[in-house]
Amino acid sequence: MVSMKAIETIAEMKQARRALAGPVGFVPTMGYLHEGHLELVKRAKKENTTAVVSIFVNPIQFGPKEDFQKYPRDIPRDLAMLESVNTDFVFLPQAAEIYPPGFDTWVEIGKVTERLEGAARPGHFRGVATVVAKLFNIVGPARAYFGQKDAQQCVVIKKMVKDLNMPLEVVIVPTVREADGLAMSSRNVYLTPEERRQAAVLYQALTLAQGLYVQGEREASRIRQQMTALIQKQPLARIEYISITDTEILEELAIVKAPALVSLVVRFGTTRLLDNVVLE
Image (tube, rainbow, N blue to C red; front, side, top):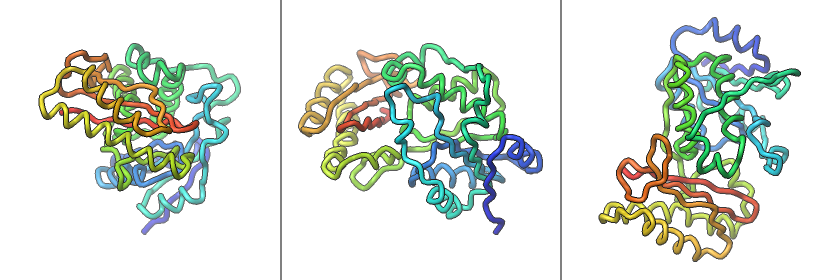
């Protein structure tokens, strides 16, 4: 087995890319990896000749009051995990490599970024789209892999790729969950043991929404009311939003038609947890 190669500069990554035959599968991450990330890498390995993973905590997608400085980082652990699933290349640039002095070009995507996370975190998706566009240009993948947990991000990236005629396919991989249903996330590490126990209510609420839909409920407000009541039984849970939208432009629905995206953000202490399900 050829050992995994770590690369830190854009020039070296581009040089390595030119030498690669066959399609490249790419998984962009911010590190502090978990099983969900490894699922993306396994898909990339299965469907392409070469799998490239990037680890880059992207400063421009964090707001002024957000957790950029304390975002969890553990590069040695990440590299060991990537090695365990036979990743071929890991791209580990520094911020100054991606955003050199004088950098002043941004990718902005319209309406779909104005809602949900875009409304809660102004400028977030401009930062995401800009870095992902740059990484696509550097790595040159045939396919890029993202987790369904960040549903709005998936919609935004797909729109960017379509609208800008980028020559790659965006592959969305189902959310990987803990035994109690909590979606795996690098931010789960911030939860206290009691917050972690109560956080299982997110998936319970999403499952409730699915059940109501299957039973014939089509009034979005009624589904939201029942989800809210369930989450509020957990004393540490603070609901930021519960949303039921279409899956293309993320417009709120009064009457639910499939496919619909049920998404929520709930705070436990200082930790924002987001999750979603698609009603098929």
